[in-house]
Length: 105
Image (tube, rainbow, N blue to C red; front, side, top):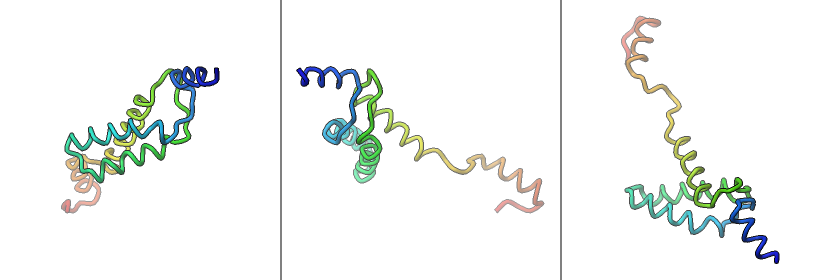
């Protein structure tokens, strides 16, 4: 009876994630990243990062392992690719000219 309960518990998303749960999904995501021309080393590091952040975490209710991994992968990529400095070069040039009265170098 407990195996049936565990099956439904897994479907409903109320379980802690293990490496065994994540391995097939992460392998698929890694292969998809490599197929999309991402370097293998980078794809492996991304998947390792996602795995480290999810192992032992409880899944949200009514979510699958795939959707959970996809959400965390998107969050990780957004965090990595979001610039920490302003990318508005023209505004930087205007600020330097206005405040410091020197050429922008």
